[in-house]
Length: 117
Image (tube, rainbow, N blue to C red; front, side, top):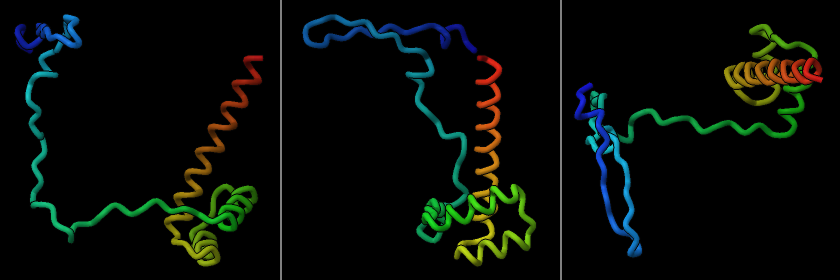
């Protein structure tokens, strides 16, 4: 980096009759340039991000019940559960991944609370 870029620039302005000093660093005053250029312009035909799935109470109940019985499901079990709940296998897979992460975090926190007491 150049020494002049590293140097702070002072800006003074008045606000409500009070003189204030504001420090601006070089990266705050340097114009931002995009490092990525889209290969093609945006159009409505491009893929849009899928909305987050909200599971119903019944679906969550069934997923939790299955999780308590078995933390990891086979592909066939996932497929069967997905059909039963009316969701995709991927949604079931991701829900179980997230639930295992939550379970692991909860167990870890409870163990650290026990050891700190």
